[in-house]
Length: 85
Image (tube, rainbow, N blue to C red; front, side, top):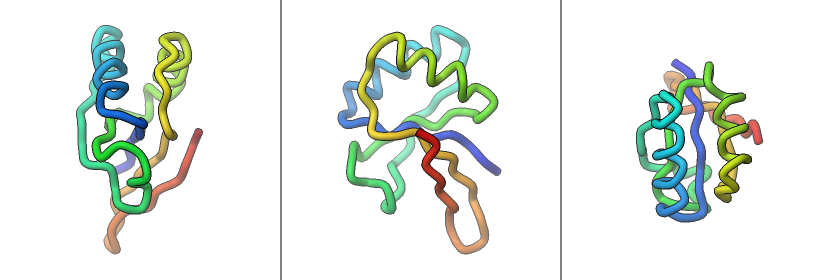
């Protein structure tokens, strides 16, 4: 299963983004940031990749800073993580 993950610089930025995404009917939930990308906030927002373009546009429009957007896939050995933005 693949999903998108937004890593923020602070939890407050994540809360602001979550509010906007939910207002636009994009399901998002906070999860712990994977260790391999944990240089930012300890919590990240998980969302469906089908909403990627809309998520990028909304984050740009509201000007919330974020460390990166990643594609995460659960694999038998753990997780495969690819930075998108």
